[in-house]
Image (cartoon, rainbow, N blue to C red):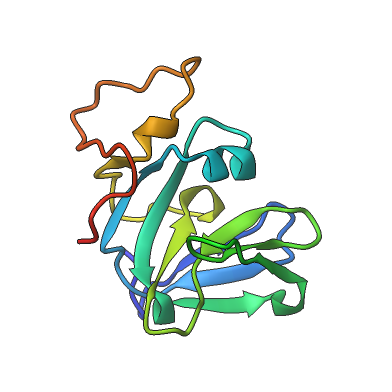
Length: 141
């Protein structure tokens, strides 16, 4: 599990943006919303939630781009390759959702929920994995 003594590294696809996580994820899950579908090009995204101060940029801060939609958290990605890295504002009092696909190792937590099932596409059956399911956003932990 990530900690200050054993940070978990991550990066965008090209490696221009590199970061690490220095605290344990509080929860993790799958998001099936249309925004995640368009952002990832897949039927859902997998994200780990951690305090916004627990993600530190190691390289490529100048390459980061952030889209701030009218609703929801800001979405940060690499301006070189387009690889998404997290949602939320680093260094704030809030949380960020780190994209598990951007991590270089085991996050120490498995997904615990599925949200925005009302947006899930019919062509991608959702596994019967026993996880709690929410038609829209889940309640915060």
